[in-house]
Length: 140
Image (cartoon, rainbow, N blue to C red; front, side, top):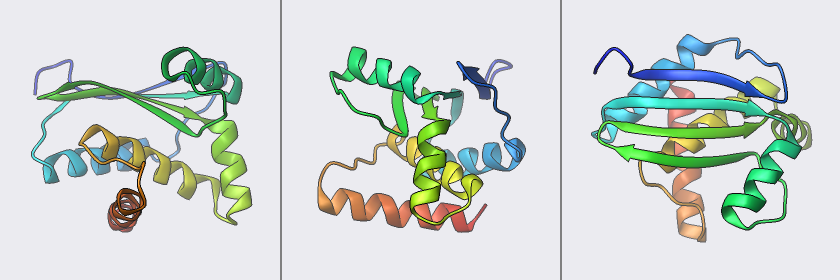
């Protein structure tokens, strides 16, 4: 790992600081290691619903709100961007009767699992993704 490798947190159109950054960074490293990947540069960008909606329209041609968009950049070492709507995470946490932090951590793990190759388009992929999310969240 070179000196510029790591997990970096940013904000767009909002102000937010993850209260347990070091724990989530260690979990990201564990997920990558478990899947045979080295850490390159992973950016976690917290943003608003509207910011992520614009990205969803522009880059994916989807006209709906989402909690995360993952952009893989490089596989070895693993690099990519995770854009996360704090508004959507709050709404999902409320709807599912979960704490905001636990839902946010699930979304971050979900994005990292996308980076290492997991999908969520078909029912079997969704089941596998949820199983992996639960497995890693228990390790947090």
